[in-house]
Image 1: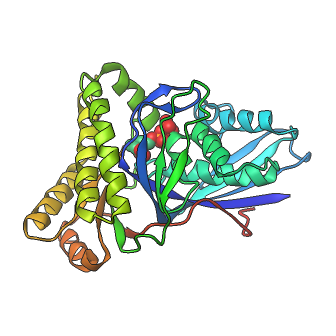
Image 2: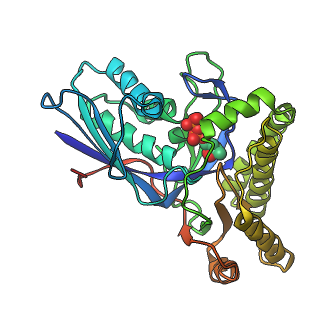
Length: 333
Ligand code: DP6
């Protein structure tokens, strides 16, 4: 039987950058994000005795199941699923994203949240939302937030086994319908340093890491409160500053990690200029060169017009708070 699921990417307003346990994917700090409504992964899973090995394809390309990349991500994930399930048959998985993969657009978050929802049904695991979030987390940390809709907090947790490290909803997608993120795609190329390797190197070498952790509780409190009170300025200001702090960690990693390109800087400067001219908007950037502009719906036309003045931006995608991971009837094969 085939099972398919869709899950949307989520973009952090307070970032996760560093693990306290690599195997269980346990974070150094809690994080908060918005699940988007437009950038998604669609995944179909089928286990059947007709397969004599696991098969995985991503965006139409077959992935070697002996490769390190596969073993570290999907292979590891399937081992966990098989421990939870009595079903030990081989599985075929096909997944595709409707946006660039591994380019700093949270494709692993969407991908693993969709895979979690699809395997939960295919393997009849019967997991509730909390358990789904814990399973998705072990595929890719940020994926645990894409299980839910709207605004979400991934709690760090304190237990060694990770049973208290999962995401919970702060507010659903309809709570703040005017909230927007404009994705400015500066390049569709895959990034050179994956988040996983980059954050491990940061924790090991950045002298700023302690400062990051010292300030995180305050950022979380402000963003959480800002969402609940729909205080756009509080959320925007805190998110932008938190993003710059994360990039300071990256810059002070040895060797340095620089994800930005020239367009990233041009867009940042444009946003600061717009703000100085009274148009309230903020930016956030993840492990890649893409800029996500945080704004309210009413300001979209003006902001987009201004950003389009910068030549060389490949694409602009407008997103609002979106749904969580869900089962769909459309299969990819
Ligand atoms: C910069 O969740 O991709 O987007 O857990 O190693 O798979 P792994 O990392 P991943 O890292 C996301 C980092 C970030 C910030 C965030 O989404 O909070």
